Image 1 (cartoon, rainbow, N blue to C red):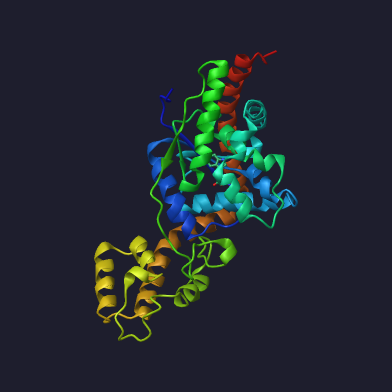
Image 2: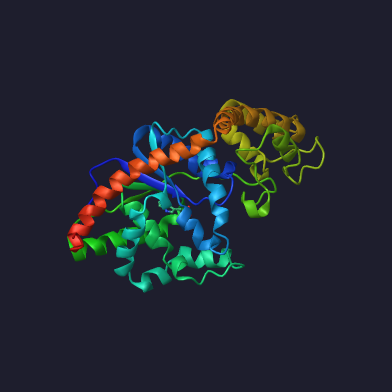
Length: 331
Ligand code: TRP
């Protein structure tokens, strides 16, 4: 069964500030999608508990920061529903119901689960909740019966499980959930300052909330083509960490110019970095302006979340009533 709507749902865990990797990997897509679809974007704070359970109070501080990053980046609460997972209690109820019919073996064989266990090896993740992470994710999605979910490649196994859970529910209770498709959006490859993947744990990121005084030295210290020791040595943009940034931020003509200048050594790495500082300034400034406005009124972010959660709750309530009815739990 496919959904006859253009609704999409997606979420992020509130675990820290967003960087350019998040922006070009996920957020650009959300910005495009909000123009074309009925969107539900949410802060997955219950999901953050799977790794932060030992210190749950930490999560609260990350929630408004995540929304601020979103809105500063251009998500518009007039165009999409921005909501707060833990404030739509229906998610807890549907999670329980879905967990009762999800075979443990499906969860144990999930490659994303195995990978996350390895990545977060310093934390004890042998919890019931962590194993059930994809059931909660399936809940977040199915609750709104979307036709698609914009996610990164790494979330595909979770999406497959979501569809399997939907099929099982439908098989047992009659057709109810449409099977949501993953909306795989092209992932921009943006290395961190040191050439590795941009990541909080590598401390190699440029954050959306960084001011230019922070960004400038980061860029000036970036690794470029390591074989290019002197300005007169010809360089190779293909192995330079800086060039992917230009590809995302500078015009095509400028990129062609840079490429040529780098290869024939008429254009040095410092020139290239200075230009990038300019480009990043142009890129971050409107975001910083929106962030300043949000900071002037700290209640505003919570209002956005409250209003969004109200809308999400209305939809969730409607669907939950039907589900209870289907399962004979309407009393
Ligand atoms: N698992 C997602 C991530 O780590 C976050 C998430 C939770 C999510 N629930 C979701 C994403 C529902 C899309 C839809 O990024």
